[in-house]
Amino acid sequence: STDWSLAARPVGMPKLSDFASREVDVADPKDGEIQVVNTWMSVDPYMRGRMYDRESYVPPFQIGETLQGGAVGRVTASAHPDFKTGDLVNSMLGWRTAWVAAPQAAMVQKLPNIGLPESAYLGVAGMPGLTAYAGLLRVGELKEGDTVFVSGAAGAVGSTVVQIAKIKGCTVIGTAGGKEKCDVVKSLGADHVIDYKEAGGFDGLVAALKSAAPKGIDVYFDNVGGDHLSAAIEAARPMARFALCGMIAQYNETGKPTGPHNIIQAVGKQLKLQGFIVSSHADMTPAFHADMAKWIASGKMKYEETVMNGIEKAPAAFLGLFTGANTGKMLVKLG
Ligand code: NDP
Image (cartoon, rainbow, N blue to C red; front, side, top):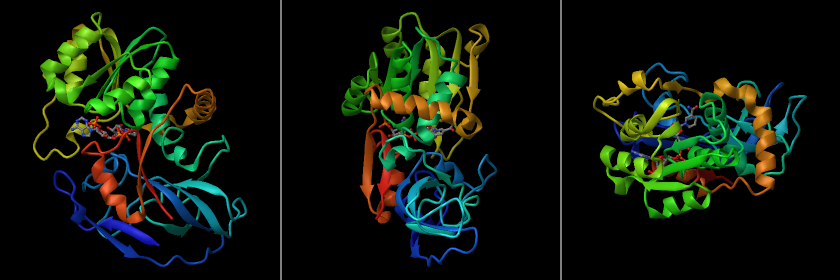
């Protein structure tokens, strides 16, 4: 197997030289183990958090140890009664081309047969899709007729948020970087799209939000943080709900990040700001899969992917998340 590990902990924006690859032997499975060849692997923004040496909801990556992340693959040999050669599985053993492990240790799930291509289980029908679904419907307490603002709207989570909100009869405002991405967000059904790079910071975002939603927003789905979050506070209606999903604008921050200067409005407007982690909402998976299968089949849910080919491209794909190289889900195709 070709495996990637950290050569050094990134400081600020990660660099290709922070990563190192090596060849690792993959043994035959021992009793209770399966051997898998990965066909797709995911790179996700949260992985940046695991590159810091600090306590978090997932343990930090260690230098020289193979990195981990979502991957889809096929069983090539099995010594486990529940798995047979050819089974399609989802695991947390990405950043490598093949592996052997006990299914429990690899956090393996057999994939449901809902008629989707393999790669979809790492995006719209996988972790990012469930993040959008749980964050919007449960954390954001979405109601028909709400005005929803979502940042990072051309990305894996954001593009799914846009479409779920439209399916649920809401007005949607999305932000993305650049005209091309804004056109994609519009094509997904968003009512208003703001190019945040053109808006140029807090004042520009507030002005664009006020013109898109003169009566304010009911739900903010935050993927970005920073000026986006402050602008959403400014545009929030009383009792608005904020689903705090991620704040990618500060993942590579080396100094002390600034908090929203206008957070005091959360008091008077009685805002509900709630952070969440997708794994805490795993109980929604069956409903999520059922809805997604239906929505994708009926054409109500579209999904884009940006694919880099070959395990050697994994670090570049990861870095691309922070420069906006992806539209929709960023993926690495293996084998
Ligand atoms: P995306 O597919 O959205 O990819 C990242 C995108 O973020 C880029 O394409 C880029 O789009 C945008 N971006 C990067 N840097 C900045 C910046 N400085 N300011 C504004 N935008 C920036 O990733 P995901 O959909 O996988 O993740 C989206 C968010 O959801 C992340 O914050 C992630 O951490 C979070 N997340 C949280 C989970 C949870 O359980 N809470 C689970 C999964 C994801 P553009 O070109 O438009 O700038």
